[in-house]
Amino acid sequence: MAKVNLNGKTRTELERLLKDIDAEVARREKQNRKDALKAARAAAAAYGFALEDLLAAPKGRRRGPRGPQPAKFKDPGSGKTWSGMGRPPAWYKSHVDAGKPEAELLIA
Image (cartoon, rainbow, N blue to C red):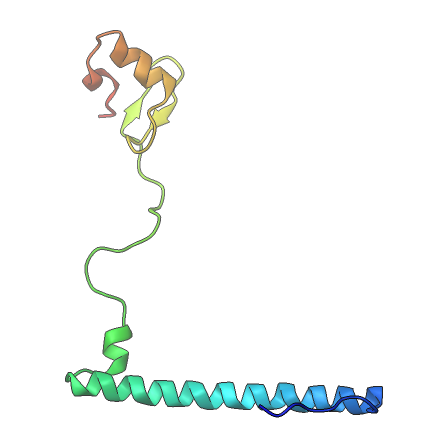
């Protein structure tokens, strides 16, 4: 790669050169994206698929965090509830540790 002699350039010339470099980098990135997309479509077509079909969300189990779950257990004393997901609350643990059945806490 050839070195560019920047000595003797004014600040304005350097700023213009910097703008030109940024514009060229953006242009090449755009072209590289087009080329990569074209190559990806060709590779998918070689296997009999459309690229968009391969990139579509897969059917079946959804990934990611779940939303709030309905309450499954209720503390008769305080009225607090628990969905049964995650770490059990203290009132649930103390009830079960006391040898009482879990079914007593189930919400009907």
